[in-house]
Length: 318
Ligand code: TXA
Ligand code: MG
Image (cartoon, rainbow, N blue to C red; front, side):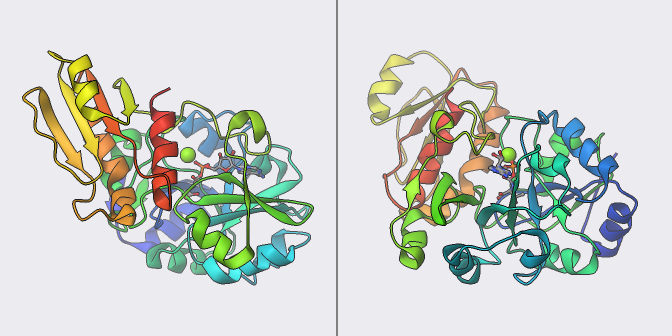
């Protein structure tokens, strides 16, 4: 039975004993273990039922630490690290041999970031090793954005959830790799393309599995509720289509009136995409518990974090 606790020293003791702790980050909760412990890394894969071909993100305490684990830092990678860390950007760089192949699924690159959460930054600074941490959910289900979400998945499987409150960004980090030293976005996430382009100029986005073999985690069905979910430009039309069914609605700003709507989440009544992103997964978790026939989600505007929200909603519909 796992405990939910704010006690960092307890988390340190469990991690030093090569066991797992779920940790808070600004994006989603991660299922963390010592990157140098084969036992811990194997239990991350086993607990999540994650295929071994899908590599893990390494969480480090400082920008300086990057030199310990990667061979080479392209200029634009350094610019991004300096601009956004600690924060929701993951850089995929050529790894040093110190990084175990189990972490990277045999690839010669490693994904790395500094999370922006005071509790986890303190934790990382108290440890002698970085933490591998995929999102703390079973493979392909909705990522957790609170300690309670983690516990509904893993309460019998891990010893501790380090409680850092609800995640403030609420969507995973944006993942950026480098081809000929130029940044390529492999996964849309909590740092918008516009913010990235302000720092390094135009970037290419290769966010689909078929064109991003370098990001094996970008499966079509991912972040998915068990309830049938559809994404629509026109909520009224979809409501007519599912007339007589138990319907849940996720919308951006507006509250929609209709008798067949059992529950509705307007993610930001003031129209703030950052607020909407932070509430998306909690809304999906809540609606998915309600035995609905269908979740109807409204398409978000195609800019800023709206792009990342649409990406997750599209994967939820597969
Ligand atoms: O916000 C986040 O990134 C969260 C928090 C906990 O930090 N972590 C997270 O991890 O979302 P995970 O494992 O759920 O997603 C990591 C993604 C996977 O799609 C994986 O395939 C990709 O990163 N990845 C990891 N290492 C890679 C590498 N060397 N090359 C390309 N993609 C990589
Ligand atoms: Mg994940």
